[in-house]
Length: 554
Image 1: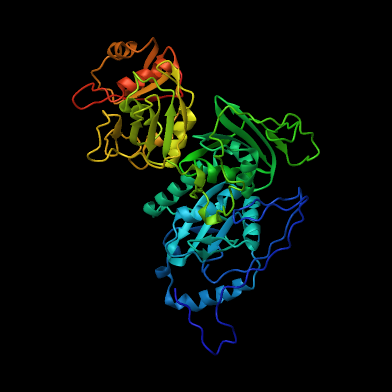
Image 2 (image 1 turned 120 degrees about the vertical axis):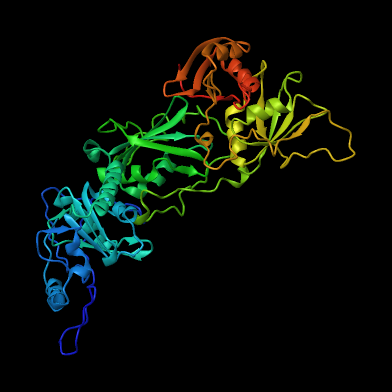
C-alpha cells in the first residue's frame, strides 16, 4: 500500500513515533549485572502498570478484534479508493492510546527475518499461543496465553529495544485482541504452526513454566569448573539466589536457583548443550524436581547469595576429577561473554583454551617394555583424540612420546589415562617438554619400528567434523560399547572373542539397533586389553568392529 501526502494537509509526514520509556520499577537489592541478555521483569503482586503506546505507521489494519493471516491483510486487496481512508486511519491511530492486549505487535523487522529470528524474542516472557509473520509489511504479531505475559514483553522492550539481524525492532501492544488463522492459506498456516511447535518445544511443558531451579551436568570436563565460573555464566540471565555443586558418578554437577522462572527458562534454552570451552566442558541442563535449595554454608561447594552471613563450613573442594598442574580455566572465564536477545536459543559459547595447555605431546612412562608397541599406544590414546605420532624411546623403552592432533585431545588423554593399569603396570601420563615428535632422519640408524607416523591413518575417530565420537568420550570402564556389528554375527561369537582377554560378565544388543552392543568385562584392566586387541577387528570383508568405553551398565 502506498500513502500519498499533499502539501494542503497541515500535517507532518507519516513517521514512526518515538518510544516513550515507562517509569522504572523499584526493585529490592542490588541491580543484576549489566548484560545484553534478556533479563526478566519482576512485578509486585496486585500492582497494575498503565501502558500507553502510540500506534505505528505500519499497522494498516481494521479495528476489528481479530487479525487473520488471510487475503484481507494483503496489500493488493486494498482498493485505491480507500487509500485516503486508510491514511486517515493511521493518523487517527497515532493519537489513540492502545489498551493492554495479549497480542504483541512487532514492527520494523528486516525483510529477511524468519520465524526463528522473531519467536525467541517472546519466549522468555511466557507461552506463545499463536504467531503471524508479515514479511511484506516488515511486521509480526505474537499472541500470548494471557495479557500479563504480553505486558511483560512490552514493558521490557520499551527500555531495551530488541534487534533482529542487526536492525532495531519496535514492540507495542496490538489493537487486536486475538489472532485468527485463515484456513484458506494452508501453506502459510503450516509454517505458522511449525514455528509455534518449535517455540512450545523450547519453552517446555506447562508444569515447567514455573520452575526456578536448574540441574546442570558438566560432561567432558577437561578444565576444572567451580561455583564462581557457574555464577558468571548464569547470572547473565537473571538474579541467582542459590547454587549447590557436587560430584556424582564421577561427573561434576550443580543445582542453580533463580529468583523467577523466566530467568531459569532463558538460561536453560540458551545454554543447554553448549561448551564452556572449545570442544569440552559441555553443559547439559534440565529442570530440577526440587522447589527450593537449602544452603547451610557459603563456601566453594555451595552459596546462598540472599544470605551472605552464613558460615563457611567445610570449604574443601571435591577432587574426584583430576587435572594437570597449572592447567585450568581463566580467572574470569566469561569476560567478553554476551548474548543478544535476538540470538537466544542459537548462541554458542566458545572461549579459547589456556595457552599453557597448547602442547600436543604427552610423555607416557612406566610402560611394559615387552607388551607395549606404538600400535598399542595409538589404539589406546586414540580413544580420546587423533594420534599423529608415537615414539618409544630407544634407550628407555618403558617411556614413550605420544603426539595428539589437538591440545585438548592431549588433555583428555592425560585426564583419563594417567594412573591407568596397563598390562599390570600403572602408567603415568604428563605433558612433555617437546612440542613435536620427530621422525628418524634419512640415513640414520633404523629405530626398529619404535617411531610410527599415524597422520594419515584411516582409524582416526575424530577426523570427521561433528562426529558423534566427540560427544561419547568416557573414562576407562569395564563396560565396552561395540558398533559396526554385521547382522549375521551371533552373540556367542562376540563373547568368545572377548573371553580371550578376561571374564565376560554381561552382554546385550541394543534393542533398536543390532549393529551395536554392550559387553561387560571382569575389570577395567581386562576391558582395556580387549579394546586394544579387538578395536578394528574384521568381522567381515566390509565390517570392522569399533570398540570404545561406555558409561552405561548392563
